[in-house]
Image 1 (cartoon, rainbow, N blue to C red):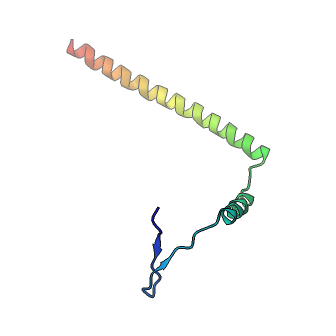
Image 2: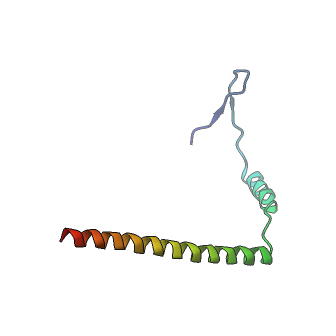
Image 3: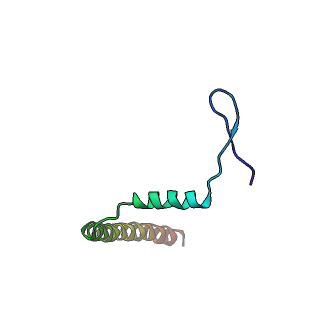
Length: 80
């Protein structure tokens, strides 16, 4: 892979410094430590919300699909 060039504001061009594998894994560990996992209560609350929203949307799309089906059946029966 070609070295990436960085152009600072003063117009000079410098090469991007390569990261060693050890430094990379230290950076990954530091970023992993920043992760905030949800509590069990937050996870359950979110799952319940998603389930309720899924039910509402499925009922909505069932209604829309039934309405379009009735319109298409009506249009087909007029053409025959």
